Image (cartoon, rainbow, N blue to C red; front, side, top):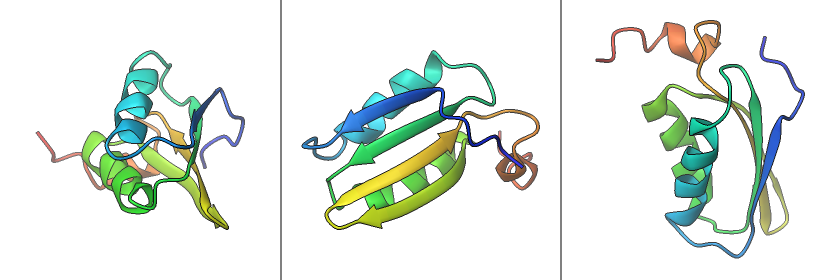
Length: 92
């Protein structure tokens, strides 16, 4: 079970696609495996883009919720212990 302790937050409100994902990727690159990134976004495309990014990059989407026009996501940086990674071990 991923830790729920947020390590870094990203305020992506007002940013349009693809900026929330690009900024998240840059931040995750500098984080340690297992750390949690919390993203707050207002772009409706982030509801599709952030989960797709997590799947492609092997990070674990811990939480996604909508609060009116604001979307909140928690991503655990890829680690060998991430449950999302077991299914993706065959990805080159």
